[in-house]
Image (tube, rainbow, N blue to C red; front, side, top):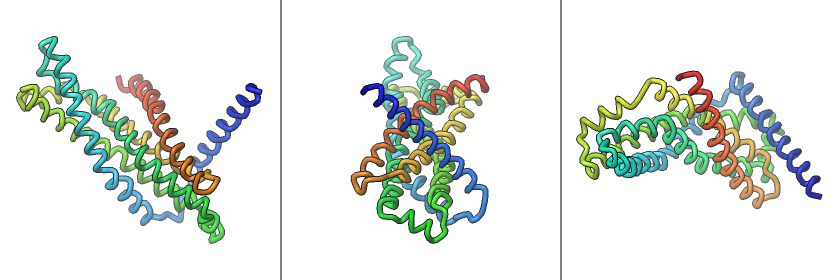
Length: 258
């Protein structure tokens, strides 16, 4: 019995992966051919980018602040408090900025896309689009994927900037580190490879978050309960995949850049 269950689980998992890959290829083809829904892309950039700005600002600022607070206490043991800026810049730009921004977007954007598309599926709106001769992937998926691909790196840069700002405020007020010492430490702790790593990662993470949200939403079934399940599944799946992709991307980029 347990063997049958395992086989069914593997079959279902492989089917999901297959359908996800098919969706990604279909979105890629639709993105480079006509018709192109430019207005929808701009609308999604507004929803995904500007709509997520507040949560990204808060996350970045307080992450930088708490990182300064914790690392300052540790560095004190070695008499290295002035190097707090170096630690914060390396941590935020290489790892924490991209990953925390992606996780925030998974919770806000991934769930929203899954719920929206799932509702359209269960209310037959997707079928109506097909009946009218409109490709749902071209109309609904491509604008969201392009918006996520464009906005995730921009939001990551914003999170990094406010994270460094939060660290500076704590270093100045709590750790008594001079502004000049902090910012020179920030610059000294960064290499161009670190900056490239912090810029390249969000493109992949943004793509993964949005495509998983679209995939889960379009495969929704079971009425309103199904929409709720799809929303939960989208957040869980995109959050886990973000961490997995981040690990493999980090390994790959380290082998190339360093």
